[in-house]
Length: 222
Ligand SMILES: Nc1ncnc2c1ncn2[C@@H]1O[C@H](COP(=O)(O)OP(=O)(O)O)[C@@H](O)[C@H]1O
Ligand SMILES: Nc1ncnc2c1ncn2[C@H]1C[C@H](O)[C@@H](COP(=O)(O)O)O1
Image 1: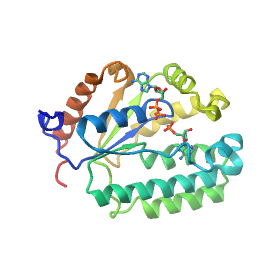
Image 2: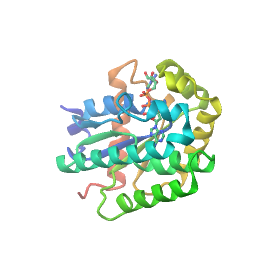
Image 3: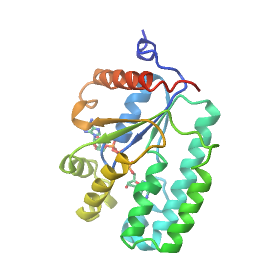
């Protein structure tokens, strides 16, 4: 029996994976989508035209990058809607504004006027009754040391040259952000609770938790 049927999960849910850079969102997105027979929606990193330049000069490129990400994620949202759901999404749209844009503004690498423009655009596009929010946001969390190790191990050049304080600040902001997040239901998963790199089967306890959580929160009235 397919795992989705075993846990009585629908074929049209939208699950988004949130968490700081390097925590394991893409890896979880792939594993979950494969196990559930869902489609995936990934962030574009290699083809992102601003990311390298942004890491070299935050102040010069932060606004451009936020606009790019907003457009990309909104297009993905439309694609998910057109398919009628059944997706696992690598990073939520809420993190762009709640973590990245806010952090760059507060740290002085995005101007006040750029931040206000960005926020207004974000609110007009996303925080409306017409925007379909995910059925579930899975928040991946782990210690700063473990996450740093994963960033190092993955080895994206631009991220290796970034000062440690940048990742530390982000890690701390994530905890605060998730504690106040209420745009959709949240399931927290500690990265020490599963090991999908070593065995494919270890995704099953994660799916069991998702099923329990979704049934408990009775979200399936699409
Ligand atoms: N469950 C896991 N156990 C061990 N290593 C992992 C796990 N998930 C991800 N990784 C490793 O951590 C690094 C970052 O993972 P990735 O999925 O790209 O993170 P993110 O998408 O959150 O930035 C990669 O090198 C990946 O192989
Ligand atoms: N909204 C964003 N602002 C700045 N940087 C961002 C934003 N969204 C993603 N990023 C960066 C962080 C990483 O370097 C890459 C990919 O993110 P990952 O968490 O590894 O999937 O893009």
